[in-house]
Length: 306
Image 1 (cartoon, rainbow, N blue to C red):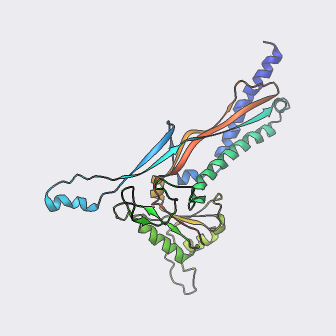
Image 2 (image 1 turned 180 degrees about the vertical axis):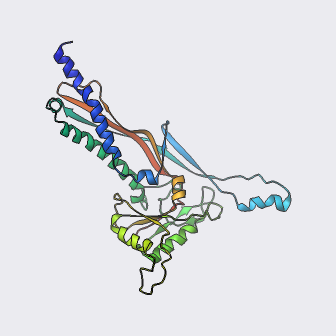
Image 3 (image 1 turned 90 degrees about the horizontal axis):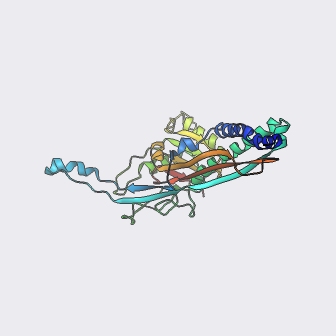
């Protein structure tokens, strides 16, 4: 092989580890709420399915004491959430002269912008669950939005509905209303599920109000030095990627991690494309494949002031 041809063919391979390292470094340097809010899992299939299972009445445990017979319980089929993994590829290139001129700052910037954008894309996708929480075009397995005033109990019990959609501004009194409503959530048999809110998720525009409500020992609504019952009850979490400056969410974090799912079929990665003419420009492909959504809604109340 002529020396020139060897150099032409190898410069991209020599640069590849640098591009991959700087891209991955940028991707991982940001704090992520996706990983804090979602149950992040891996997958080795084309899709994942989570089937809901109905509840039984606690009274079933009394049957043996009352009648001497051990009962066999049965469960209704719940709603099924199907997560179909979607591909998200992009290509980018670096010119050979950038390598020849040892312009590594420019190479680093190109690679890091890819990592930054990949992180931002994932966070925006994760936030879309909340940004579209009241949207009629972003439906869950029960056929309504995540925050709705008409959640059916189950496929078998559709006559009675539940409500986790409010139209209240963020105040101490309205936070109490939301908390009491969440603690009244029931399963498909009418039993209270025991939801206990621990997280107040807000856009940056509401962070100060949220902190004042939750972290003030005395009632922030009056000057009588009365105790603030909301003090310390919730953790306040702002998120840059919430697009509505007035919408807020009260969340049971334990139940959220049982129901809010993210599946990484192929984690974000970058690789040098084969078969390209690498004499003056080399091409890399950034790729990720994932799915996300929720299997049950009984972990959140959303409020969007009218």
